[in-house]
Image (cartoon, rainbow, N blue to C red; front, side):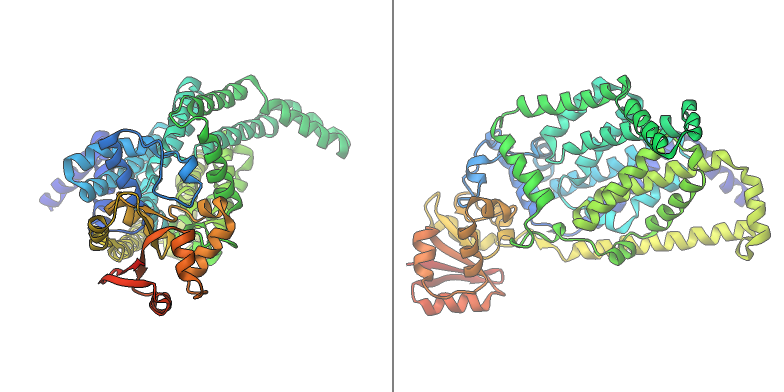
Length: 542
């Protein structure tokens, strides 16, 4: 018993030391994400592109032109909209080799976001900040997205730093971080959206909760009530304080766009990236990546783990205690709903929806706990709910259940990453092409998603389409349709003319599962198989 008491005392001392808790949170996230990454694969082909860009910048400096995609708008309007993300990857790939370094970079960024979340929660005096942080860390669909070797975590870090500066009204820092966001990630307009949402939340709080003059509205007619509400809301939204915040974000964005190595062609690029791909999205006409397709609501619920349960609880509590809410809580509700709708439209926005849902829950539960007598609430649970008769045992049982769910979700995510794209995919095919082509030769390939892997292994040659098929669709819709018809084996006539004279290709890489396409090329008589392995075949164009 004495030894047990000593152990208990030791853990109490450890957990009472805030600096130790900081380290525990960071290393819990670090080792969780490191374990997920422990496979010689990337789950997303774009990871090969990001790694290659970091390598090329290290060797040649900023890449201002992109001739590797000959039949896309990127040939004329390329910008590296992940420039700072690529720059910061360079030390890792220099010190730890390409793939190990880039995976470590991904792990550190993901762990850093979790760590900064915890710091933010402590700064905002969130109750049970450790538990709230762990809920985010082990949310399955978020764990999956943030572990992709892409700029997801980098964008989240910048976005939530922006939100912190908005909360604190640190406008100069907000302008600086908005400038950095433009140089780091194509979704930089999210910073402006957050500033607008917070200004709206601030005006809603001051109009409906703390503004005493609103009570006078009760005595007015319904028409004058509505008019009074709108006038008050607009006045508060365009307050001097809110205009300074909005102006700081706009100033940072404008300077980030103009003081930029890609100006002015970055304006045209962002129109296509943000509007045509991100908002309009031609998924009906173009075979875009799976992340741009809708997230079925039932799948979203099942994939979100505990976050949906806690988020639903927070929503109920928010409206029960609506008269006690503040601008921060209102802002987080608006932002969460915004990203929910975006996620239902395109799966990729789950990486924003889940953190905002957890933040909303954390802020809401903190406010609720400050407004109720916790001892009385626990007594109520013991009296009215059989499960809580033995309160300590019930809490222990809930912790065990939640821990089991979290570990299970992490194991499933780890297993998913085991089935990713091998680092060596297309390596031998690329080696053959480098040895048998002149620099700048155009290579036809089966899928637009094959480009990043081919580009990583072989930047001597040029390719047809990649990164997003919309870039080819915008370049020439008829050309895109022809490419899609050829590669999907929908047409078999005039293949030699189309591939040789229109696409000017010297070689054609055909994936191993495209049997009909391979058969069409062989029957044509103008394409000769010169290489084959488990990744695909190379056909030389006569």
